Length: 407
Image 1 (spheres, helix red, strand yellow):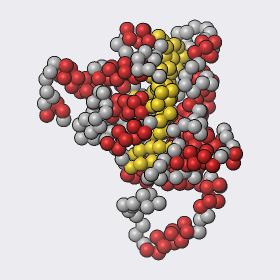
Image 2: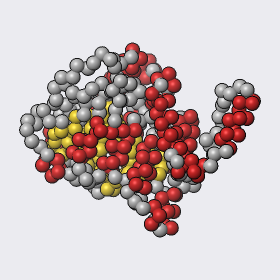
Image 3: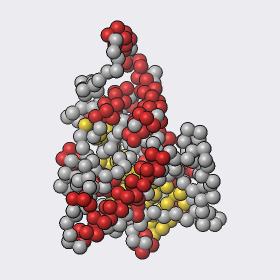
Image 4: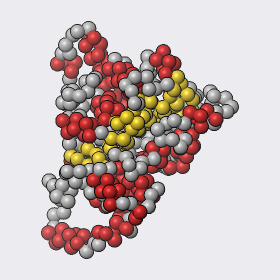
């Protein structure tokens, strides 16, 4: 509770108004409020706030239909150690908790089960204090604790020493949507355990994820398109990922579902191998972007939009579903939403994972055109990727990056 209200500021100016608010909050029966869905109401308020572009909160909020889809195919269990290294407001952890409780009978859990559930199941880290505050309140309203000596969402930098400790703790399930862009200040992360140092935050988070997975552990991570094809260090990280993990599925997401409508994103699903080499043999791509509506305020993304993908994914959360998926192949593969690609074929393309084959015949619509700020953000993302590639070329040539280039 102290962390939730730490360094809080109020816009309430009149003492009488503040006194009335505190008195009304004090009347709440928090136990009954949880039973009556106050946590779900709070999630709804977070979503509404995220959709208000002026609030700036959208960058910490992943659409709940997408979260519910990812959690459904990853099938979290009580035995899992679940982590979100870019927790935001805690959406992935809350949804995982809901899934576990809906698919089990908590009343039948043993005392050891209860202890594991409370103290060693849900872990997260968030670097933005306001988002961390919202996440702690979200956990509390959903009946989850944040114990400094056990599980919970920590306030800290995943790309710093706190993240290194989180990685060493390990996880069997990591679900996350890392922040877009480069590290604040443009420098390299302060962590010393990354094989491939880079200022690109998504690549740093990706290394944290597959390094932090226990053997057999599974992960789903949201990444923008440019992380799938960037060269130099990006290519090295993707190759390392496919060596250490079975990258079995990529879901190409529809446009317009995040706060920056110009950002095109994907979900990578992978499972940590028992060995360090050669774990990816075959990778499936499911294209949910081509010939889909432009989502926004007028066309709202719902769970139903992911129904066919969930059926395609299959029942094994580790991705061992090739037989099921091949059995669904029929008709013209050039018009199907899903296709399989061998590791050798991917290597021939320079380990680029930006794979598309469907002709997008959607009109794109004019009702939901990206705002100028979104277009600028997309352009900035592409420029940052180009600068990162130039840095890699200079490094290969043995040249130091000058201050003007680094800026």
